[in-house]
Length: 220
Length: 420
Image 1 (cartoon, rainbow over the protein chains, first blue to last red):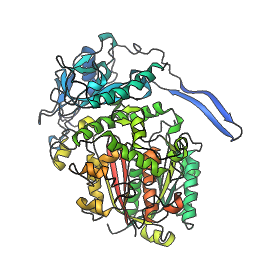
Image 2 (tube, chains in turn cyan, brown):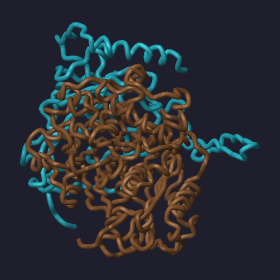
Image 3 (cartoon, one colour):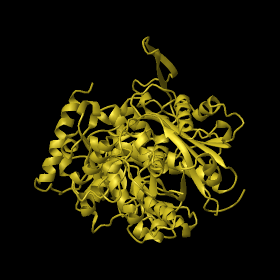
Image 4 (cartoon, each protein chain N blue to C red):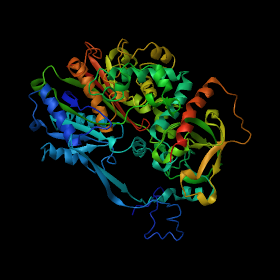
């Protein structure tokens, strides 16, 4: 084996995971694999349609970025930093992105749970699993001097009050709800931040949001 | 680099949601239509097939190109599939271009499709979002229209634009699609309107993600497309008068997460500090420069040299961002550029007369090929035959640009096509 401090260590198998929570949040989700639920037939056009349901459980092994997920559970935000050029990352990069640093292995650094909004949008539509929480603000936030911005929900304000550059803090979900994922936290306005007065643009956004609130109420 | 590579023919299926036709039948239909245009073309001519298909999730079928390939009777002919997000079509075309340019093959088929009507729209959005970094952005509730909206909002602010400026691209492409019998807008929602769409219609449509509304966004589609990429020798012999030369081809890349391009060293090296940020498409600029250079176009003059373009208008805002990335306008004149409708048919650089993704549709694997075929029809004067009228025909066009775009601008290709 080549010896080089930039190499990532691969643990010997088996990795035991003595602290198991594999079904803590399973809910009603079942694993069926292939499941044919039914069919439709149109005799005039001779068209046949099959209803296929497919469900699969994945085992995402976070390996080198496990420290980030563990941090989420503990309410700590961990990013990485290149010891050569000093660039700091969240989401973490486990090797530096600078070609001159030649894949220098980054070091874990604890981040201050604060940042500012680089850009944002007010979502009125989303993927199937996020429809019920519409409308929401998705903000790209630069956390604690990182060279990157990370996307997450901005809560604790009316969607039309969000602003470019506004200071935000990281807020953690209740401990028992955390599952080591990015959704264990969200952003809220920093303490002391006050929304600016209504403007025609904010009125326009508010007006666009109203039917979304109504529509969400109709979802089962 | 002396060998000239040509598009000698090709076709698209109609696009729809839903639409009842299998991938293999879509490609078979495209081959048949191509044979009507160039009767000399036989499947036996094909030496290599490049398949273009994005998401196997829609069909729950890995390697679906294997079904299409043997269905066409092409056993023994080498093949592979290219998958590169929304730029799958452009990338497959790029692969075919390389294959012919290298001298390995003289006749290469490019066939693409997507079957997005196999799932609901919201599930489809989530499937496509699997091409973003699922550990971070997709999990946080993001789907592509949301990422694009966050980029568009900052772009809008920094250029002092209004929602109405973006809406112009939305109505332009949909209204041109009405002249295209295969377009999803014409075959679908247009039947409700039976009139041109207005800026007001866009402004009134439901919020998708501010500043984007429903009509600022492209369509989800089933559809297929086919292109025949050949040497000039083959094209001249079998498709005389009906071929174009690919004079420039560029492909470039950017970060998967839009938030990672605020200070990426690779971009700082090329374009200086603060580029592309979350507002510009650096991979579009960079691949555009490659294509312009190869075609001998001074990119500051590109706007004057290109007569028609088919570009990746996944969102009205991204069409506008692409104008700037390709040097057609800059921060100073972008407002006039948009408001003077310079990319409409009556302007000096008509964009997406075929309808684009907002009007024709966006069956991902077929899209870039569709754009190339529309541009090919323009330069070979086949538009009056392929569309309902000559309203969307750019007469005497010599040079066309084709653009295909993936992720949040993560992979982008640009091509310059010219009459021989």
